[in-house]
Amino acid sequence: MTINRRTILAAAPAVALTAGAPAMAQQASTAAPQASGAGQAPGFYRYKVGDIEVTAIHDGFASRPLEGFVRNAELGDVQKAMQERFLPTETLPIPFTTLVLRSGGRTTLIDTGNGDMAPPTAGRWMANFRAAGFDPANVDTVVISHFHGDHINGMRTKDGNAVFPKAEVMVPSAEWAFWMSDERMSQAPEAMRGAFQGVRRVFAPIAKDVKQYEAGREVVPGVTAVAAPGHTPGHTAFAIQSGNGRLMVMSDTTNHPALFVRNPDWSAVFDMNADEARATRRRMLEMAASERMQVSFYHAPFPATGHIAKSGSSYEFVPVQWSVAL
Image (cartoon, rainbow, N blue to C red; front, side):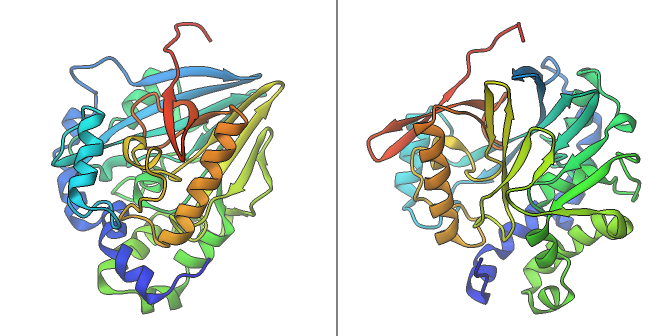
């Protein structure tokens, strides 16, 4: 992936926020009392992919001003897309949903949420995780898709304690090479330094034990890493297969589907390489649609899973029908 000064500068302010910049950390102090999810039932949803049990864990949402969020579209066009989906036209509510996989007596996480670095409307992950019957002390493996803060901050508390003390941690090698590079950090604009520091806060204490994986590798049984660059240098999706069941974990291939599934050529402010992110998005959406493969998104409305339908030169996200049965 080509990451140059222009792409870094364009993404720097947004990446700083996703990495748990001081402003977001300050907001987190008000989030803790709300983390029980008061006002709603616990946010978890189970479904099966063959013999693998998947549990979606909701971590709440963050609101982002709509102006400037899509870098290559007029605000009026973005507002129209929001209005057509009965969403607010001034701010974008961005949901967060991670996955827990149970197979062969082992528990695997795909990403970890915001942790206690969350904005006030997020930080629900641990309460929902425990409500689903899980214990962080019993997590066997944590697989990370990329190093933005809303995906990694759940690994470590603000006080520096490991949340999953027994877990093996697996990360994309390209992400590690970029974000853990002292040279990259020294060359980064000031607005992006916090992102590099946030990555080090999470990973430096366990650096010698972190396992790096390459695209195409089966990271745990039934889960294969799929290269999906553009959003970040080593951004990774995951193909889950068990028996006749298949699920494509899209990670941040799109942000909110109301904008970026219907308009796959739009570029979110968080995408570090917009051209590559658009190409990845088109490729992944086309594959999911043509193969009628179930997908999960990190930033779709909960439970963040469904299918992709082709619609002319665009696509539509079709959520699953909620079921009480596995």
